[in-house]
Length: 334
Image (tube, rainbow, N blue to C red):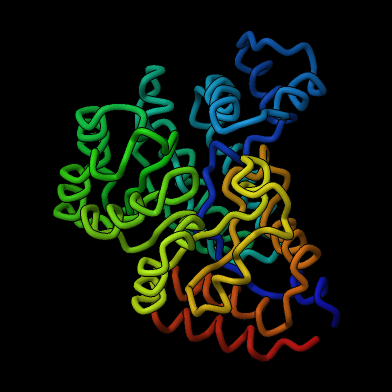
């Protein structure tokens, strides 16, 4: 078994994927037509061209425009189900999926409409593919603290089916400290906590996520490398960093995949793992990300396996499940 075969064969957990960011052009166009919604594209090829954005903001513009075609429970189900089929193809056996309520509620979509669609797809993925999943509700950080509190309130009836809350959208100018009180309230309500920090934003945002938000996981975190004291703390605490290589490349966090620091972070003992972020927009799903870093950085078999083991260790599954998947990965050989 060569390294590419190992990538395909390894069971993997995905901990950083935005379900709205898995919206492939074909499905977007299909649902827009189904719902009789005008979009500024005449065909699938024009939608695909629009996906060639040049920075985070231009990505977010098309991302939110695409979300507008999602109206009915079946639309949200179809979106999630398409993602689960990609997971099955890439041997992703567990996934913890971000969803953005405010992207939909501010359009007048009821919380239960999208949530029931996502939840039904999760149940079907478990029965049809054996894929386990958790849902993580994210607050949009470019919106206000008050709006985040309102979203938290809306989520409380679904609390038993949402494992954690997160923080996403435009990072610069919206430090974690802006949401300190919301995260405290979420923790009080029983949610686990994660937050995007240290992708576009500086290492200071990672410190804030750790010390003010008291997160269980850091999403991205690649700029932590700029602060040796922070790096030492992350390694010591085994604080997970959910790294998204193709996303980092597409958003110009790195200019070339050979510059990516995931291997360096791994070699320094940090709990890093591979994720796809917004795969419909960023050029690939889980195995595409693994193949991209393998081609650029020439990871060893042990490093590839460690990335996969880390994905389970950093997840919110049981200790017994983590042990099972680590043992399964250890037995694979190239």
